Image (cartoon, rainbow, N blue to C red; front, side, top):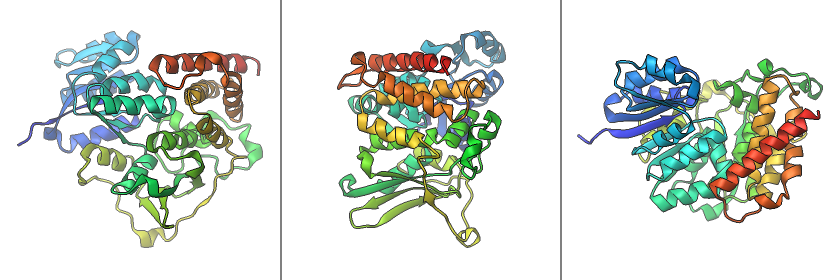
Length: 391
């Protein structure tokens, strides 16, 4: 028998982390869990670490360390807290690391994992949006590999297996349309965080579900498609697909389209990355096409979802504009959740931040370095906060 694979899960208490553990739980002898990290859900983090016998459990919040230590007392699992501890845990030798920390906070731990030569299963799309060239270069330099875990990018990756990327004519990323896809435009200004956080198809966390309603999540995915697969922006399309069964399509020079079809269950994309290059059983629904009957598609209206237009501007601008875009989006989302700005004002804040910082001399750099990314992130957050203070 081969030795168990050493795996770590960064962001274990979120929906992606829990789905990953669900798959690991089905064959526990095949894995040795090195590190699990989470946020303030200490009970879940400690329970998971104890169940899987992790070497270390880390909370991102220093004020939660005592609670984590208490919860892990007697289990033999090491407890730690804070950003430095997250990075140290990610840098522990492992064969496979799930990067599921939400937001730009996942960038540094993901880079730490890549520098060990590990395979990084990337659910943290913000890493590629903020620093795609850096992520790819670190993987190459250290013999690591990045496998996309977003359902759309996993679909594109699978459609391209054995294909020449040079023959790709177009990539079509599908979008559910989120909670407000059928709302009249005049209602959107008064939309509440609770309404935005109800997804018609997917079971996801609050922040990503609201991003789905605003299409900021899809905007990030367009940028990630460009960065990860090096597809020119003009060849990347979006369509609204309410059923969420076709996750992406790749069009080739001969006019053919390769589509990936599956249930809206993240365990498929996670399982593909976990088992790659093999395909193994994953406990997801098997689709009955006769029962489904039909699939529908409609244009992604950039008047309704201006975040898509901003994504195209970011792809064209390149450089550190992705880091600015993401940081401003995160601050605007914080403010919307706190009811300090309205739903439609999120896009206004991001666009104003991009306009303010776009030509900032300190951020012009052909090479993407971590310190430059962090500088752009910090400046964008500060600028977005100033803009919102004037609203």
